Each structure stands twice: as structure tokens, then as C-alpha cells.
Length: 432
Ligand code: AMP
Image (cartoon, rainbow, N blue to C red; front, side):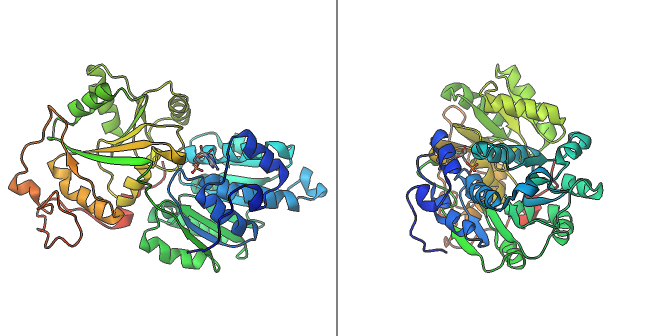
């Protein structure tokens, strides 16, 4: 943990005028805690491992110092031709996040008169267009690993001159789903470079992997869930009544928007149909949708035109949806860290947010695992008119005392049928 006294203004962080001017235009009044703590160290060239609440301003934390250092190093000769090289590489797990991060960087750099070239590359869209955009190299490249490897094999880009590597959503980038691709990419980069790892959660297994990647890093760990801005609630419901409860909650609360997480692509379509029968129009967002449809839906949701969005976990990582009032777990995520990523879509940047989980009897045990791993404990609530049946002997399983704190409350009954794989890798799948 760092014990830096945190500067209160962006000027005190040592940022240059074009960036300060842009931050003022964006009405960023002061650095967020992660920005205040990390930016000076990143500017000084230190490696960093930052565990910060999602929505805490992570993108600017790496983007601003990267831009500042790149600008200082750009000589007039390299301006026009950067070869096929990239200098700053940001790896992210999803296409949408790649685009979002690149858009933020471009926005922060508007007063650099086009001196810094930022490109996003990701799968699902034509590779030819990306190859053309990469002609002459790129100062900052935001990429999903698979597409980046494709582009490297076509000689469209080279990593030999990468001097800064960022792994955003680092826990996922370091998970088994990406291991092969990440190893291949790391082998193509110089060993001597600045490496910055950002994630809301850093499971222990990931921490040990980071030792190899980082050189004497600064470690910053902020609160993983900020109770003051994000309220978490859990409602017990009967199996088979979840849709009715969901529709009831949406209608009763008249949320401006709601993001609903399900665990499978086909569940999202199915749930949308069932909600439609109850008079609620919902859009769906998952990995089987074409990229143009994914972009259209996401844009519509971000713009507020789509009110209810049903999504799989591809929407759980890093997406910044302004003032999203509520996230609902219709199905629980398999991995406890995915729970944190999902709920982090609401209550971003200090806004008030709400995260609701609907659990039926079969979910009880898994939810206690999620709570325990994330060191949270929520009172089980009922929705009036949809009260869940008394817990049966069979379903009580490991949650013998559903209202008791999970830690240090005596023995737990071992669950017979339902096996919950607490292995943190289990919830991760290949990028969509
Ligand atoms: P991020 O965690 O990078 O996804 O950022 C979450 C949101 O916070 C984005 O909409 C940013 O534009 C916004 N943001 C980042 N830093 C600040 C700041 N210092 N003041 C106000 N908003 C910020």
C-alpha cells in the first residue's frame, strides 16, 4: 500500500496544460482517489498494481500519464511515420471496452493537435479496415488479444517498441481464458517496459502471476465496494417467479434504465420475450450478436433510448454507462469476482447506484459463497406479494442460517447435490 499524501488538484499531480484544459472542459473538478494516488507514480515511470472500485476513474489514471509521456517523447521526425510500431499498448477483454477506452483517450488528447495517434482494434469487425488505420503505426493501441495477434501475424503492427503496457480488467486478462494469447503477446514485447495493472478485484491466484510481470510496483488498493454510493440488495423468490418479480420491480420502481444480467445467451432472448408479454420492452446484448448490432444496442443504452437491457457477462467489464440507476442479477454470476464487476456498472463515479440480486432456493448457497469471497453480507429481503416459500430442508443446504453472518458462525452443512466451483477461474470464459 502506498502512503503518498494525495494531491487535491490535477495541477498538483504534475499534468501539462493541454490535459488540464481538457479536464476542465470535461468538468472533472478534482482527481478521484485512484487518480490522486497513482498518476504521480505512473508519470515517474513506476510499475503499478491498482485495485480500484470499478467506475473510480481508472481509465484517466493510466491514460493521462501515458499521453503526457508520449507527447514529451514525440520528436518531429517520428510524427509522420511511426513505422509499424506501437508505443503504448492497452489490453482489454472485450470489444466494447476497447472502443470505450480508445474514445476516452482521444477525448483527453483533443488539445494535442493530432500529435498522438490512438487506435482501437478488436474482433467481430473487418480486419482490413483496422490494418489500414494502423498504417504508419500507432502511439497508443487499445486491443483485445485475439485480434491483436491476427494483426501481428499479418505484419500490420509490431510490439518491439512497446514501452508501456496496461492490462485493464487485469484479473480477467490474467485468467486462463487469455493465458495463451497473453503469453504470446508478452513474448513479442521488450522486457524492459512500464507495466500497469488495473482491476476492481485481484484474486490471490492472480496476485501471484503479477509478480512475474511487474518490477517493484507501487501497490494501491482502494475499497472494492463503496457502500456510500452503491446499495446492494438481495430478494429471495420462488423458482419460476423470477420473471414476475422482475417485471413487478421494473414497473413499481419506474427506473429510468435497468441492466439485467443473465448467464446464457439464449436466456437473454427468452427473458426478453417473457418481459414483452408483460408489457416491458427489453433489448438483448450478448456475444452471438453481430458487432454492428452490439454497437447499436450499446449506443442506444448509453444514450438512454433503450430502457431495459438484458445482457450476459460481456457487459460486466468496465463499461461506463452514465448514471445507470440499477443493475439486476436475474441469474447469479458463477464467479464471486464477476459479481463485483456486474454491480460496478451502477454507482459509478460517485453516483448513487443500486444492485439487486434475485435468488431462488437453489441460489442460496452460491450467494453465500459470493458474499463470503467479497466480504459482504446482505440481509435477505422479500418482495411484497411474491414472498418466497419457507426454505425446505433440501434447499437450506449450506445456508443453514440464512440471516447469520457467513464468517465464524459455526459449522456449515455440506451441500449434497449442487456443487459450486469456488475456483476463481471457473467463471471466466473466452472473450466474446
Ligand atoms: P472509469 O472508471 O475510467 O470507467 O471512469 C468512470 C467515469 O468517471 C467516466 O465516465 C469518467 O469520464 C468519469 N471520471 C473519471 N475521472 C473523473 C474525475 N476526476 N472527475 C469526474 N469524473 C471522472
